Image (cartoon, rainbow over all chains, first blue to last red):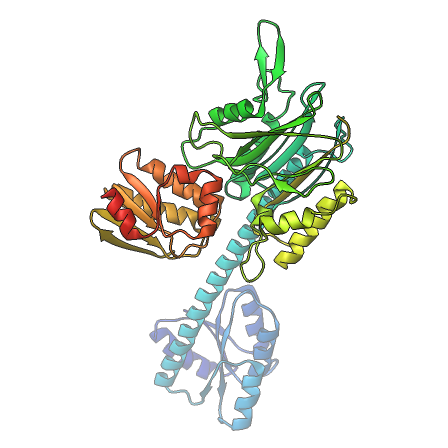
Length: 402
Length: 111
């Protein structure tokens, strides 16, 4: 170890230097405090043994200067006194001295005190390097986290753009909706669109699982489930002979989707897909493992339609549950994800279908938007928190003309 | 996640000791079941007696395990509560998985 030995007495300095060298240390000498301070500032000295009484800068002041200098590394300081007076020790400790040697210094005391200091310095160095390592990992994590967060925010923005736009009006129906992802992005998605001059399609789907994998599949599905992808849309069948495409009934559209989304693992989604046909004044719906949609016919109590069905993506060539209903102006239909009915309050009780039906009953005079917003409010009060553990989505539609 | 394994006749009974089989535990749940399948068990009874809720991820894990059996052997369920049975019925999984009242009944049926 390199030791800076500070003493104005050249004889004492020579003796102590020799002792230190015999103990295997490299010695740098300084004849007073100011000279020592110059050495400390310009070298990597981390061990100082300094006499107390010196011209220019006494040892105790050198010690104070070291402590207040904010050096890059810790400097271990041993002060030498010739008296060992208690008041001196207190002043020296106060100045930041780590240890003391009383003159005349015995070789054995010098050896053990330097070794003790060396041990402390080593521990301090290990700690400092660990700290540095942690700080660097921490900053890497912070920037990685920021990157992921930015990505998720961008994905959330893109996902929002896939939802029905507020200004978007589909002739013959009115719609209102709500989507609250459990994280940044949702595995739930829905839409409403005209399929042809008489038919309006609508769906709400919920990809199993959460987070990015679920959201990516939901966004892929959202882009596929449009009537515009003329030849690729699973909602229409393209007849190459006539160059025309016709709207598939929901049962066939869902079967086609199931055929295309066979996954090797356990990835799947649940969905309700429906068509409102203004020519026949009816709803045609297919339910694939998704919670039952609620039909509120004008002047009647809300009822659940259907009772489940197999989810999409698990097994090829399965039939899905389908049902029809008449649809007249004023009739409303609510599609929702299980995040609504499975939303639990603090004691674990789920919101459930019964409460959902009750919340919808007798609200005919309420606008569709208010109906959805009030329902969300009720679910949120039920859960007692604003962040939900599952995506919550609701799509309400109302027939405005037949 | 805790699992308790026992044998009744030639069937392996796996009891999941967790009340909510949801996203956070679903993959661990599937890994445990797949490990049993890879050990050569072909008759497995999944005891859902402690389970009060299964979400879509949990159901996915169940189906993934069934697929991992590759059509050989049987994976059946027992002791499911009403909420779990309703979830299984909604998704028609009651057509895919046989559901029994007790582990003994289940083991007897598939042994």
